[in-house]
Image 1 (tube, rainbow, N blue to C red):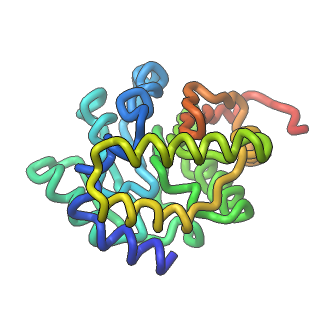
Image 2 (image 1 turned 30 degrees about the vertical axis):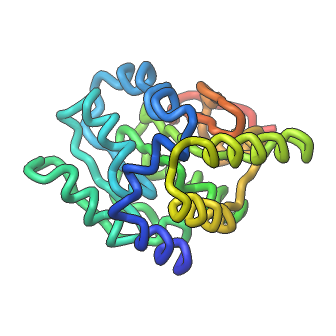
Image 3 (image 1 turned 30 degrees about the horizontal axis):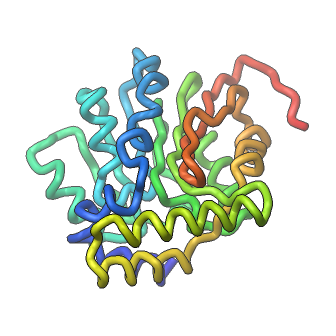
Length: 232
């Protein structure tokens, strides 16, 4: 996490301006979950894990401006940018915390994460999903917008090649490209199916992928303690 904290801290001021170059499906990626978010008619609290500059939270805030948001990240520099983004908003708080190791604070109706969990080893992903389940109120929703590995070497190689070619010709400046390619060395991608199964083992009853474009996916699940489900 120290290297992640350093690299993302260094790019914190330029992070948002590079997102649409580095995420070819940018708009769909951040908005595909909105029908599910709108279904949480009684939601009052939201937690953003690995919130960074608060980009994902901004999309949610536009949909549900009355939620009380907690933005959590390992990088204080990234959170400082988030504080600037939401300056003047009274319903935001910020916590610097290593979400891969530490327990999550509080209870929430909605928990989101964007492009953060893929930095964890698989065992730490599974542990975090259990912590997320515990931190959700009954009836709550978890949404993860992230990158995943392909189901096999062929598709994994195809996804990575396609992404590199796309961003190379996206118009992003050379220095930013080099830094982005360097950050991919921190990735610890796991297949989508593996992570859906992790959610089920954590206790989530209703789990699915709601959007997929190559290795960019949006998936998650609802917590309903009143429903019994068999974990395979």
